[in-house]
Length: 94
Image (cartoon, rainbow, N blue to C red; front, side, top):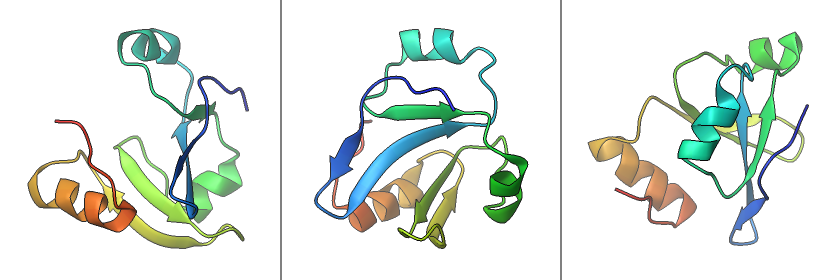
């Protein structure tokens, strides 16, 4: 899968990457809203099925062996934004 941008670590525990199910329109979106981590595109069908990936925004925490540990679906609004910030120990923009 192609890469763009650079990797970001949250503490010593997490490595954040982006995953887009398609590269359609991605370059333009990243020009308008750059992200400070690697972006991968077009995942294998097995990964899409295993992790229940969909077009709606998702945040998924995977263990080093590829198992889902935690997941959030949708935009970072209200309580969900707070839950993600607490889990990762970070402040999200907005």
